[in-house]
Amino acid sequence: ELGILTVGTATTVREAQALEQDGVDAIVAQGAEAGGHRGTFLDAFEASLIGTMALVPQVADAVSVPVIASGGIMDGRGIAAALALGADFAQMGTAFLTTDESGISDAYKAVVSASRAEQSRITRAFSGRPARGIANAFMRDVDAIGDDILPYPLQNALTRPMRTAGGKSGNINVLSLWAGQGAPLARRESTAELIQRLARETAAAQAQR
Image (tube, rainbow, N blue to C red; front, side, top):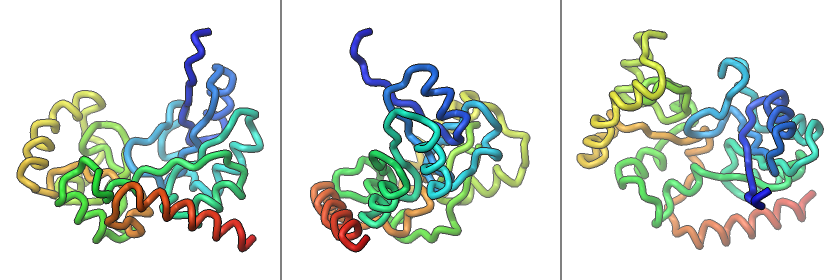
């Protein structure tokens, strides 16, 4: 009624259909590769770990609102692939972490740049909610405890002082290093350079189809 655009995040077809029924204007189809917190809201997150390549076409076929592909998209090849799978747009986060304008610390950027895909894990260690990031000492130690982790927002509040101190000191072993599985493809460049490169790469990838 107020003309405000609303966008919801879905990790399954069922969630996408629920969002459409609730009247959202667009849906982010969040694949399992995506960095940061999982958008799951109907099922246990373990049951919603569907890869972007499998999730996007299923969501596109199931809803009539625009679909925004998310998860593991790092360059023009990924954007072109998402559009070919039926997405109307592509959403990227990890690709921007290492840009000059990014607000994360230099230590965080260095970890992202040097990371390998197999270092990417989903954890509840930092916030109490499932989120994907690059494994570090704190994540490994807390995950070893098993399910005995406080729920969100208690765990988030408990670890906030530690994360803040780690950010100031550059201690990467206590930071929540949120990043997707595509992190090894991140480049150190300006945001303008990234956007321009994405446009060129997408056009080139689509021209090869």
